[in-house]
Amino acid sequence: MIRRNWLPLAVLAALALAPVAGFASSYETTLMARIMILAMAAVSLSFLVGGAGLASLGHAAAVGVGAYAVVVLDAQGVTEAAIVLPVAIVAAALFSLLTGAIAIRTSGVHFIMITLAFGQMAFFTASSLSAYGGDDGYTLYSRTEVAGARLLENRLAFHYIVLGALALTWAVCAMLLASRFGRVLRAARENAQRVEAIGLAPYPFRLTAYVIAGAIAGVAGVLLANATEFVSPAILSWQRSGELLFMVILGGIGRLWGAMLGAVVFVLLETWLAEITPHWRMIFGPLLVIAVLTMRNGLSGLVHRRHG
Figure 1 (cartoon, rainbow, N blue to C red):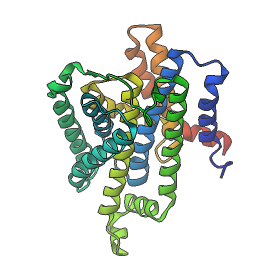
Figure 2 (figure 1 turned 135 degrees about the vertical axis):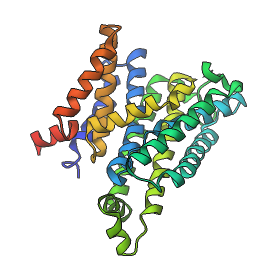
Figure 3 (figure 1 turned 180 degrees about the horizontal axis):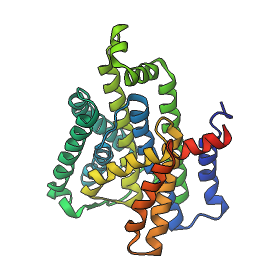
Figure 4 (figure 1 turned 120 degrees about the vertical axis):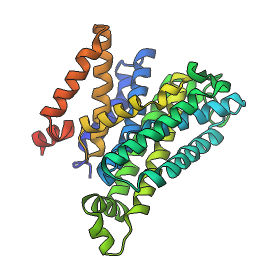
């Protein structure tokens, strides 16, 4: 197992060693936290895209629902993780259940457009919440507490908590895809009619996968809200969903660890170019297009060819 998964384990190990290897400044730990949180969301989306063939363009909405659960509870003075985390997970899962129940009845471009529409509905709803900052966003009074302790305010502790969440996300998604549930998902992705012919309905399997991915995205939202201590409607926008989908494509569809790698490269490249020039988007966009065109199976496919 270790030999087969050496690259994701190496990425996780590198992130674990980074703070003790000299990358422990406030800027560096904040950047690594952002990378790992986005990697969590990207892995959950890869679980959908590669496992069930569901390319959602509204996945950031589930991240936003989790983040706004933190906001709503924070405004009420509730900051205990034992309350905040379950509420965020349930809220994101429920959002995914309600929207997925409709979206999954379609496929292809219709599915993409419906998830985009639901994501934009969530975005405009968040923008209208004047009690929580509306378009201007909401600044948290304090980070979420763990058993009454302000553990998440410690940079190193927060780093390893996020790292643990990322590792658990990857492990759970990989385990699900390797199970009977995952085999049915992949079979339905290839040929839904054949799955129906053997007496299995693809719809409940796909909906369950959609809800699981949404719940994981909700956890990422909780961590992102704590990392930035600020939440705005921009977190739910279709551009954020597009970035997550691009991370999955860049890393390589069909490999969960590819989404992790895609998130690392995407954020680091974006950050590096932004420091060089204010017109970094004019360089960033074409570079991403070239990367996708020249690496048919993404970064994970490139690594697989060299070491496989």
